[in-house]
Length: 235
Image (cartoon, rainbow, N blue to C red; front, side):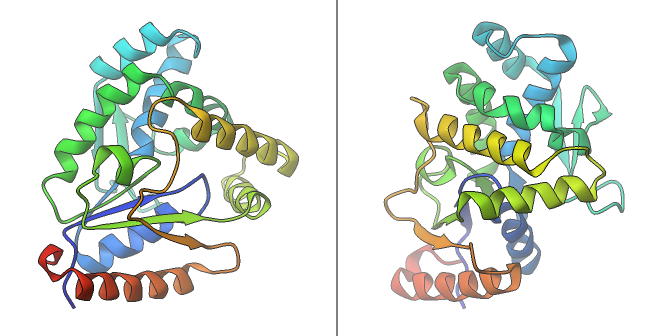
């Protein structure tokens, strides 16, 4: 089977895109890049430094200058990568409810998106990459060889995120997670710059009633079919 060299996976929170991207990257021997962690890292740093999430100029400067690095996992604790800010491991802190509640507002600012999109494109254009986010197929890597948009209904996604937080010992209610996700969807889909939406040539897949193995096998089949249709994009 031919293999697309650049794979873009988009979708709302807890649609399963990060889990799928990790599986695909491991299967193909590609780099796995979750662009969302960059926005989360900027959000986390802003919260730590007391920068209001309403201060667009300060957040843009932070995104442009932040010492941010994403590495392969450095601990055997289930993490898919290690995120360092100013040399400090903040990998698990990025999934806190505080960051969840603020990241969509931070990521909506044009200056923040410009700063991080430039970094993301440099990585993606190297090829042999599975890149996941909310605007990969539309903005960051529109030349991707295979574009996928994962979705699921709101309550299903909220339950997935709630169980994830519970497993990590976070004291949060399902209702809080549901409301945060509802607000985040509205911000992501309604922002003026790079709103969350499928690319015109993306395959759209609803994962509401699917487990990760079903999603993985379905996507492999879709990739094979796409490569047969357009063999010039396969490596």
